[in-house]
Image (cartoon, rainbow, N blue to C red; front, side, top):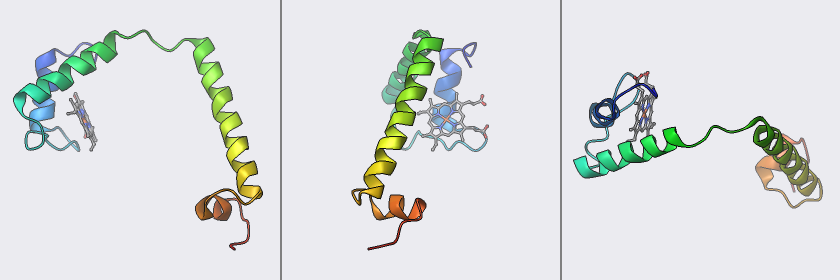
Length: 89
Ligand code: HEM
């Protein structure tokens, strides 16, 4: 995808491709070119480093532990409690 010219991304946004629907009804041409510019800016952004990956994996684990302990204390939503097998109030 990095190798694709800007016009290709614009064409996919306009006409869709495969399972992706077209966006010409929701976005006018200027808006579609703005999306292309945004995608290009993202493509130029630096890749996630190994250190960042390890950090965010650790953060996700902490978040999961936090939300399950909140659920056990009865602070979670009913879906969380159900997923954890707790009795419904
Ligand atoms: C306007 C914003 C968007 C742009 C610029 C865009 C661009 C692209 C591009 C360039 C591809 C790769 C096409 C290829 O295989 O060569 C793609 C694939 C795909 N996109 Fe998007 N996309 C956008 C929004 C969306 C949205 C909102 C969805 C979901 C509702 C979506 C769903 C898909 C799917 C399912 C594919 C795979 C299509 C397939 O191979 O069957 N896209 N998109």
